[in-house]
Image (spheres, rainbow, N blue to C red):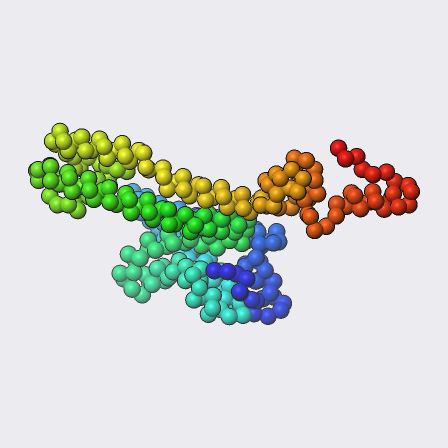
Length: 303
């Protein structure tokens, strides 16, 4: 969700609270963000530790108290968020508003619905709230860069996955025809499962070929897996590098030497020192010309 669309309810206290909770350009707002991240991570750690039977037996009461403490804290935080907004329902219908609501509902529902205790694992969705805090800090540009690179490389990745699927289907069909059912290859879908596990070099070992020809095909599948496993990573990395270069460097070539790897805010050529903006005159030359007109200056050294 873009927090730029949210507005404080009114001037005064609500505006100050809005600036602390939804912005991060002041020390107090940054301190709130850090405290919120710490509370979220601690609450998730409590949920994870509570799932260990021995710890739940020894410290079950403490886990319940901590969970209720975090639930009350996050409920109060959500109430304050809604209090300082001009349109609170707009926030509640947003992605992060739903996450905030889901993060506290399981504990409250457990009071009235006996079966709601099984929803306690939903509290782990609180980790998604961290992304909202990070969006308010210095990670917006980096996140957009990665998402943009992933979108631009989606066609190549889809073609790669389709090719892998075709290879998996072919090898799985061959092994299904070659291997006996006693080896575990009872159907083509089962053989496809084996081919995927083998191609990704995971090798669970629950299904393995027993015939020499099937084992030879397994070797081929594993070697192909080592050969192509890095293809999507390479495609994505190339797009990321291209995006970084596009954001940082300008495509404009130097009028003096033709060098075209300048940073966007560069004024002079990194290689030859030529003024890069062809629409305006080099300030050094303007100053030199003015001094010459008065008879008090000398032209700049061409070197």
